[in-house]
Length: 164
Image (tube, rainbow, N blue to C red; front, side, top):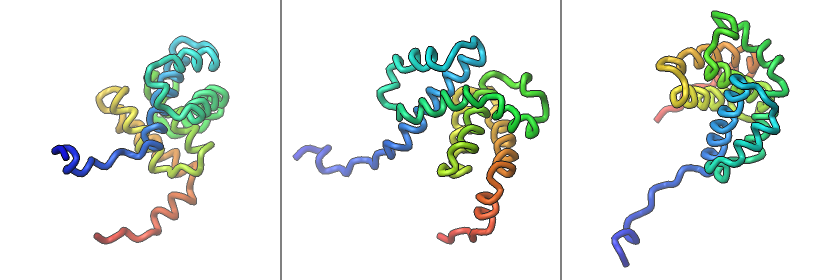
């Protein structure tokens, strides 16, 4: 018996959550690339699938996000614009990409709680966005969630807080 045998292993992070996060991260890179350089989803997809990280993502979810956002970008922009304090064209490419990705999830993935969508967006904005970009993304997505998922927000607000 070695020392490492006697020490309980650290609780590993859930693989599904990690895979979904990596899927969002890679999809964000594709949306960002599309925003800056254009191109089509299948070319961007093929390029991103060659990245080292791709073996660790949920490939189906990644494809759904990338193709879904690019296919529905006009409708997503129409959802986002009323929640902004400026024109969509004035957003940084990172903010635009994160908001598009998150709006797609809010609209097309009701099985994912709105709070999880917002938290993931904040994490992406902290990693890839400007200094306070995560605060802006949070504010916009809070407004969007109240418009897109009013029943879920109402249910969340009526639940009593759990006591420790």
